[in-house]
Each structure stands twice: as C-alpha cells, then as structure tokens.
Amino acid sequence: MDDTAYKILTAPQFAALRQGQFGGAPVDISDGYIHLSSAAQLTSTAQKHFAGQDGLFVLAIDLARLGNAVRWEVSRGGQLFPHLYGRLGMEHVLAHAPLCWKQGEVVLPA
Image 1 (spheres, rainbow, N blue to C red):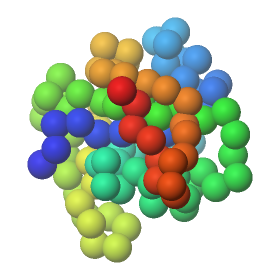
Image 2 (image 1 turned 90 degrees about the horizontal axis):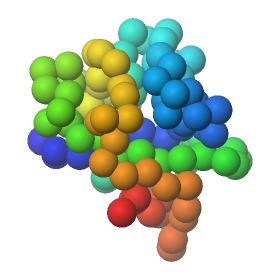
Image 3 (image 1 turned 60 degrees about the vertical axis):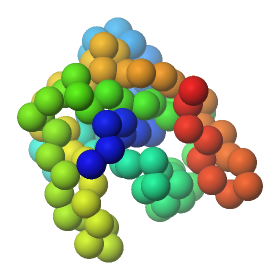
C-alpha cells in the first residue's frame, strides 16, 4: 500500500487541526474512523463529497507515522481505502495546500 494518504478538510476543520483540536469531520465521527484517500482516489473523493465547496484544503498524511492505526478496508466501489483509527495531528501532515484543480484532477500538495 501507499506510504502517503490524503485528507480533504474545510477551513474550520483545518484550523482546528492546527490547534490540536480536530476530532474528525462529522462523517468520520459517525463512522468511528477518519476517512483518508490514496492519491488515485483523491479526485473522486473530492467530486463525490466536496462538490461545489470552497475554502478546502488537501493534506498529505504520512502513514508510516500512524503505524497500525491505519487499516486499508474495502469501501466505495470495492476499493481499499485507508481508514485512520486514531488521532490525526499536524505531526502526521507532510504537506498541505488549498484544494486546486488542474485538468480535472485534484493537485497533490507539494
């Protein structure tokens, strides 16, 4: 599996993460884990769950730092998605950037 996963956050969620107070998006809290996406899944995640929203951020997450708290589980369309059963902190973030599109794809943060 990949060593990096991605999380899309709203501006308030990103601000909470930066202050150490992010407990997950509402869907994460409801499902009992933090939803992440691989690079290949990120654009479809953005299209499905964040269409028409502004002020979004994309975070590159270091899965090695999260260790066994990450499980790759079957989800949408039978694909394996990374799910975080634990806390996400800024120490797990490799890079972040405002969500931008280029030729119909989400641009990964550098």
